[in-house]
Image 1 (tube, rainbow, N blue to C red):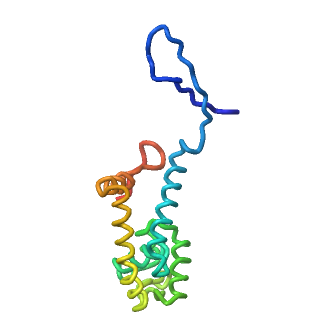
Image 2 (image 1 turned 120 degrees about the vertical axis):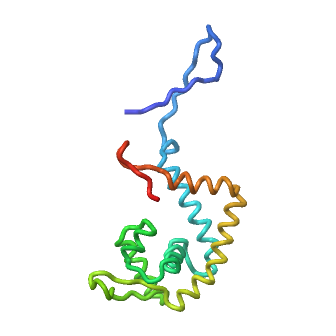
Image 3 (image 1 turned 135 degrees about the vertical axis):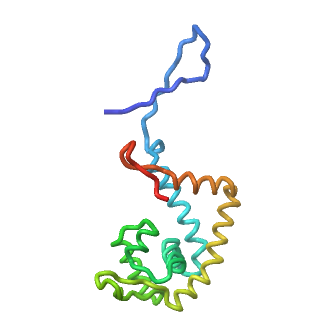
Length: 171
């Protein structure tokens, strides 16, 4: 089955004129998810390029930035802060531990939890990468306008997903 959108061939509303329709396939360009994912990939590449000289990807930088912000924390809380699946976060910090950027130890309070914190090498990497990230922020704002970028962050933070009437935004 082919789905089509019908649109007037021109904007005229003059009486007596026959309205022509142009049939267009419903394509992925009308998909909200596709558009957001495409923008996300482009922005990710932009930030990755800026962080390249520190040897980091934006996902790694955000993880060590969150650890710099939170200090010593559990993998679960770190995953929650970054809105990442717990298993994916466990894998990410495992790679960072392998590279000497973080330490992972059993929690002194709950042996089932593991606590992550930056090593001195990890803190140094954060300190090296921070100006690169700030440069990416500045360049992104120069390309897109500071007010527009601030508005975009605000609007995206307010996006609701889930069942209509039951969804709430994360704050």
